[in-house]
Image (cartoon, rainbow, N blue to C red):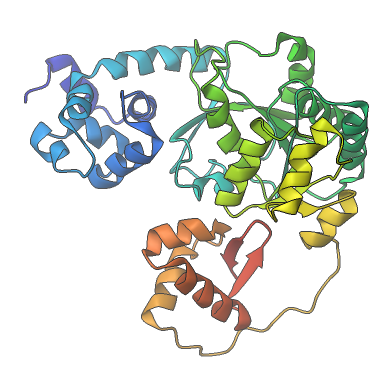
Length: 379
């Protein structure tokens, strides 16, 4: 299938902004989704290569149907991506592509993490300690007080607080972080050309000064109902620890907690009276062992091993001979950056139990160190 001359000219260009155009465009292909988009990139070698590939070869990729392949070949998404690039440049927005170093490392290990993120702010998204705080939009005085106390006491070096900038507990977490001069990032369920809820506009401006706003939605995307569960996976995936302050038996906070559990994140919840509607969700998480009971920030620091207690390091065994599977794991960890266990399983194609055993052995021999949030790095 021959491409029009204009498209051929784009393909021949290797300018960085053209690469960005392809990276944005691949997330716009109808019916693709983040998982299949990454599969396409993996098979073709790069985002731009997907749009060069022939129909015959695209159809050979598992999960790629005729309708999806036709959508790729139509090139219509490239035009929309070009429009978004103008918006990005005009509003000084940073783009975070999932294969780039500036992409949040913790999120990268999640199978369904976004291919592309849009960010306005200055916080380090790869801070050494990231806590996500979630809860009901209909917060009570008890919930707001607990949230304030949690944030003010959660003093820790290189800490980032993440939440969803919604009414209630989310807003309280962001506001408390701003008041305590802790960087805080709000995850949005819409594009960066608007702010929902509008009442948080002044707060969001302060957050951009010491934190930021992050989304995987492009401009002109409105906060539709179906966008919020997608937003929640970023809130969960960004974190080492996710804290549910207050929640009814059903709601977005419990959805986020379940996602965090699926990502092997540490989940915590504040208990409440059995008669309180907005403590039912927290009590349920604790009762079903989906969250650890906490009473204060000190509990999180203790359970996450964040207290500044220097422990004697384990000396790596000299001349340790690695078997092929251990070599494979060490190759994945060779960059020295923290990597989630799910990512190691996905890259190695070994079972969860096998990877857990290998990591334990390597950690025992001082070659790998374990970090909060089931993250690992080479020593």
